[in-house]
Every structure is written in C-alpha cells, then in structure tokens.
Image (cartoon, rainbow, N blue to C red):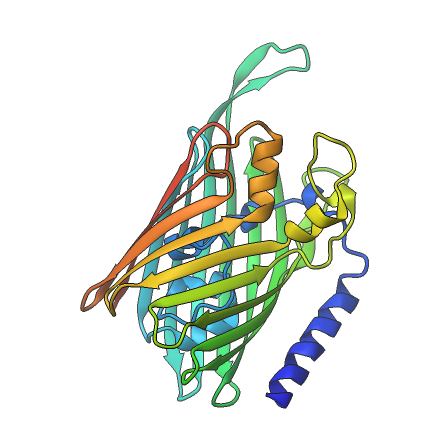
Length: 328
C-alpha cells in the first residue's frame, strides 16, 4: 500500500501544480464534459472513478479503469437532456499484450434547432448547436493491484456560425484489491486548453481533480462509493447561489457524490446516487422534488449488458439514459 499511496500523492501534487492558475470552472467552456457517460455512472450520481466493472464507457470517467474492460467491448449510451436535446456516448476497448488496454470513444450533445434573433429580438432564422469530444486512451496494469491510464481528447463546439476547438488530457490511477473488493482512484480530468476560440477571448476548460473510493461490504450484496469532485475549487464564487455568499459547509458538501449498488446477483444490480452539488443548485433554482437523486439498474446476459438510469439535470424535464454493451 505504501507504493500506492506514493503514486496517488505524486499525481495529486503534480496536478495541483498544473492547476494553480486554473480559471473558475463554473464559467469555463465545454461544460457538457460534466454529463454522465453511461447509465451506471448516472445512477451513482453522475461521477464514479472507482468502478472496476467490465464497462468500456468507464474510460471517460477514469482512463485507468480500461484495464478491467473486456477485449473487444463496445458500449453505446443515449441520454435525454433538455427539451429538444440529445446526448450520447460511444466507447470501445481492445486488449494490448498481457497488461495493456487501448480505448477510443466519443461523447456528444446535440441541442437541436433554435431561433436566431437580433439584439432587438427580431427573428432572422434558426441555427443548430453541437458539442463533441473524441477520445483515445491507454491503460496499463502497473502492478497486481495498481493500474494507470491516460487519454487525449479532441473537443469541438459549433453554435451557429461560431466554432471552438480544444485539446485536453485525462490522467488516472486506480488501486483495486480483489480479495477485499476495495477500489481507490485519483483522476485529473480536462487538462488542456483551446486552440481556437469562439471569438478573441479564450476560455478555460472545466478542469476537475477527483478522488474516489468504492468498497463492497464483506458478506453482503452492497457496494458503496464516494467520489470527491472539483477539488481545486473552494471559493464561494465557484458555486451558483441565489443567497449571496455560499457557506463553507455547503462548499465542502458540494464536492461529494455518493452512490450505492445493490448486487442482487451476478447478473442483476440496482443503484442509487446523490450528487450534493446538483441537489443544492436545483433547489436554489426552485426545483426541490428529487433534486440530486438518481436511480438505475443493470442486467448482464451472455454477451450483452443493459443498463438504465434516471436523474434530473434541469428544472424543465428529467433525464433518462440507456447503455448497451456487447462483446464483439
């Protein structure tokens, strides 16, 4: 465990040094990168960097988790979002030697057609909007219990006649002990910057430093997860509020994403999650019913895995997400 602790400490320190000058993540571009990338992740609160399941889509959460994905696994996800919008993810993994795994993926949000108006409010036509991320990564089993991974992302956004392009990198480590079913991870997500801005003003990427732990209770069908997100943001101005300055206790709570799996059998599970920040912000905006909560379930067949989840990301409509994975 001492070598694992040193590895996580080194990653944490290096990323903190890189992010000293990071801008406010609440005003950064490419915020769609914060959306869930699979139904299981969505059910556990929207973030989880410690699941060691055979799930190709986990490369978007923590590139080190590709080490646990099957050779030739293809995962496809589709999510309903705001009215007229759709979001989706595709992921594929392939083994490389005894210890390595390659992975590629794509994430998109299409916002549909919107009215184009002048500053006076006169409609002049319509325009469409799209966010897209293309990902390629590699994971390597460093020791019996420790895996590391890195992925590069090409980011593209088009809003009418305006476009932006950026490059980013995700770095991840995972410690997993199969005997105790304990998983610990650290991830630095969205390190990078724009290479083409919408106008003359460049914006930051939504950099996110995360730590997580998952543990299955011995002799019981329960697995609990705690994921800490946005660990470089501790100012009141980093968080939405309708009541002025955000209290320190609330800032601390906003970093927590909690999840639990009920492992009903080897083929069937149910999940529940709570995203503390989303709960607070939805309530502050006037939506208290089920704010921050998420639910889901999954079924494993011989070559096919099916997952479904429910959560609320916007006041106007809840979101549903379906994920299917097949081994090619």
